[in-house]
Length: 315
Ligand SMILES: NC(=O)c1ccc[n+]([C@@H]2O[C@H](COP(=O)([O-])OP(=O)(O)OC[C@H]3O[C@@H](n4cnc5c(N)ncnc54)[C@H](O)[C@@H]3O)[C@@H](O)[C@H]2O)c1
Image (cartoon, rainbow, N blue to C red; front, side):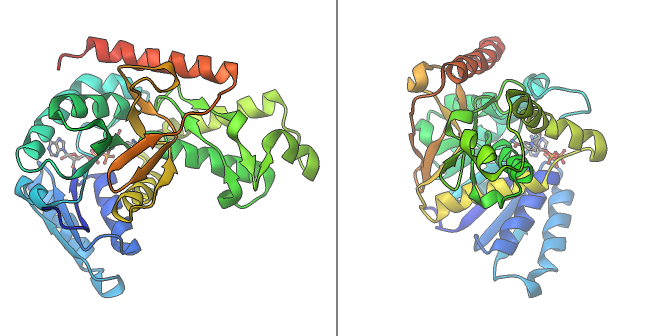
């Protein structure tokens, strides 16, 4: 039986340990367990975090092994090889498929009740692999997908329009990677469509060129951060806190997590990000809406990129 607020994190590297810190601060979990093949690293991270407990909401934090998964409500997988400078996320695939399969076998031999959030890249492909090897209902295994990319998009739009990012509604869908798609047709600021907002406020133009430049920046963000500091972990950890909160608090939040397409938007046989309702069941359902013709085409191109990779991997 899962404990309602127990979170197990597999991979105590940059992302795993920063996520542990994030949920320790937010008070989301009662128990946080860090599992890593480098047990010493997991022990060290747990010790460091525990020394901050005097300043944080009560939570038990420890390093552990896979037996801890038996009672986990949420298991977050961040273990794997990380992107090297100049390396695309898809280049990582073969290295991380093998790691994903071995971790999923450890997890599924101990529980079938947790919700699994895949973070390791290429996240869409590994979400698919985890679903396939587990045999669990697809909604119980989701990827962090483009929740981070959507947040980057909102931040850059908010900066462009000089408005609080929390008033910006914007989604990035498709692959968490180079073929991802901005859904301009769904983008609005406090209910005002983007196409009207800029002329209304008279602060900036919002030409097709402006849009293309802004979205290039969203897409290139991870590459820039990795070039400059070697890894990205703060933004993604806050995105993971948001997803975990939607699950543990049964929020029915709309998030662009990576889901099995299962016929949505005319797509099959891939996992990719679509706006979905996330609650204690994981992905409850995908929100299907009419996209612009260009957006629909770009989404299908993105799905093809992922489908081609999936076709090449040995499961
Ligand atoms: N989806 C996203 O939005 C997003 C954002 C940032 C990073 N990432 C991805 O997250 C992953 C982790 O990034 P990071 O910067 O934390 O890397 P990292 O190298 O700092 O940490 C990875 C950890 O995984 C552990 N590990 C490797 N193989 C393992 C195994 N078989 N079992 C248990 N532990 C194992 C390593 O010991 C290491 O501690 C990467 O794949 C990265 O590309 C995803």
